[in-house]
Length: 380
Image (tube, rainbow, N blue to C red; front, side):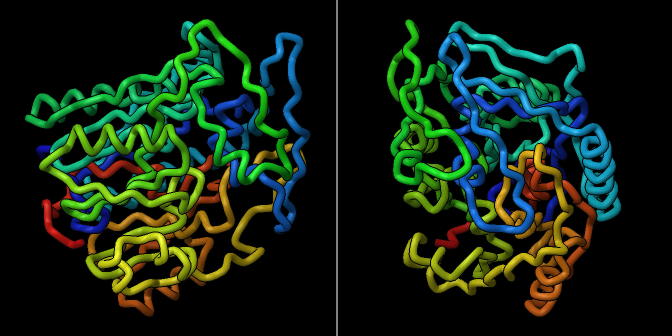
């Protein structure tokens, strides 16, 4: 089928589900610290492992490799396979990215080198708006070439008539990152992000944004903007899609992604982390029904060890995937959320996903919907 995806809820026909093959480690360096800022900060929650701060090497750069236990990766692969099987059983065509070859452990550009990770959270590096795929400008160095693992899928949609674009690729020196949000929220578990290292390739702040910072509502797209990097990307989207989509800026709803803060489940209904989310929305959306996600419970999550790095908030399970305006896929480990959605007349398909906090994503993050029934409707 031809690429067609304008919203988050209309009947899902085709989807890309990410791959965790050969996911071995996290690399804590500057871009990683900025990206996971809110979730690396210290907070009083159950069994949160205290991770030693990143230290400067002799060369002055921040760099610390944190291995992921193989049993977690194996269980994640099992759970991703379960997501695929569930979607297929619901009549959805599933595409998979190329697997990361185990020999590809590092990437290098003119300005830096970093460990590489597979295309697991495929929502992040791409944005589908209508009949166009946009490869977004990455915010983490380890993910710089991630969309190349999706190239065969994107190329096939292109052959069928879709548009295929890419934002300018940032050089991503230390000075490319706007530190203002980090400075406002500085402190806690991680090392302060200060004194970026100079580089002969410094060009100032650059365009950087993830697709998961956008909420698609037919002709309208909400975009979370927390840094100058995001603001430049917002301007790029406005200019690129002028006359086709309307973009609405949301200022600092979170550090980056918003799909564990707000999701649109059907026209007129939003799933939100708290009622205060409404204060950030355009006026017409403030009249939509708000389903406030229940507070997570301690027994919703596995217990991890002190050297396991947790990358998401406790509200990761509100990261559900809509299959239609009446049906959502949710984590079976969150029965409180399942019951709440059922009370609001949704059919909930429970699926296992154990280690969502270690790998930084839920069902919405792991998937990129490429074909839905909806069109450029005016909901706002």
